[in-house]
Length: 369
Image (cartoon, rainbow, N blue to C red; front, side):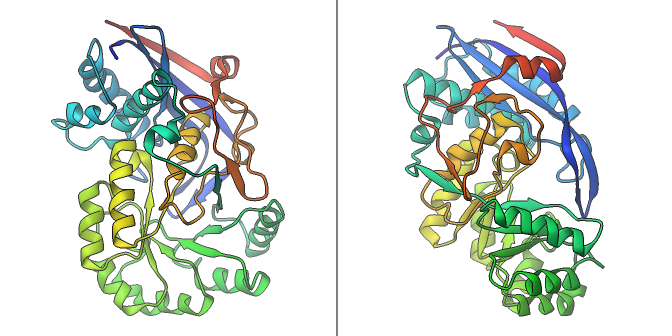
C-alpha cells in the first residue's frame, strides 16, 4: 500500500467529570487524530494519547504534533508499505516518542486491515468475540464519594475496579473499600508515587486481597520493583516502566513484575504491544490493556488488541459514555454487563463521526505526496 495523504486533526474535548491521579487533575483532553489515505482511496485512523503536560511520560500533545508533522509523516508519505510491522523499522532511527509513533502506526494498521478485508482484531491475531472490561476511578474528594462511585460501576457490571492511590490517600482508602465491597476484584494504581522507604506502608495493603498494585515505584525503575516484590505478597503490575519489549523481558527476568499493563501509546504501537503480549504469554505473565482516557479511535484500537488470548485480566477500556458526552465514532463503545463486543466490520470496526469530529477540531494539517 502506498501512503498518499495524511491528515492531522488537533482535537480538544471536555471530559464529563474531572479525572485525578497522584500527578494531577484535568477535565479537558487535547489529542491528535490521524487519517492516512492510500493510492486506492482507503483510509485508516489513529489517535495520539499523550496529555497536554508531561505527567505520565515525557511526551505531550504538542511534542507529538511536532514529531508526527516534522519527522514521522515524511518517513511514510509516498512510501510503499507491505505490512504495518515495517513501520517500526522505518521509525527505529528516531529515539523514543512512542506515543507519536503509535498514533501513525495505528492508522496504518487500520488501513492494512481494511485493505485486506480483516477486522483489526483479526489482523493482529485476536480471537476473542468479547472482551472483559474494568473501570479506572480517579481520586475522589472523599472516601464516601469514592464508595458511591464504585457502587455505581459495580451495578453497571464492570468486572474489576481500579482506584488511584497516593501518599496520605492509600491504606485507609483501600480498607474502607474492602469493608464496603469484600469480594470485588480490586486493584490500586500508584502512578509511581512511592519509594522503597514506603515498604512497611505498602505491606499493609497485603491484608486486602488486591489483584495487584500498579507501578508503585519510579516510572523508569525495574530494580527496586524487584526488591519490593520480594517484600510484599500483593502482585506488582508494571505500567510506566515498560516502554518496549526489551523492558518487559528484563523486568520479567529480574522478578520485578507478575503482571504487565500494555498501553499501545506507551510502548510505541500495536506491533510492539503484540511482541510484549506474545513474550508474556510464553512466560506465564498475564497482561491487560490500560487506558489513557482515549476518545473512540484509540478506544477501538484497545479493543482490537485486547482480543489477543493472553489479555486475561479486565482492562480499562470502558464505555465511551464513561468519559465523553459524545464520542468521535459511531456507534460509540458500549460495555454491557462488563463486556464489550469486538466489532466485526473491517479495520477498527467503528465509523469516524465526522460531524462530532468537526465540532471539536481546533485545526487540521494536511499532507499530500
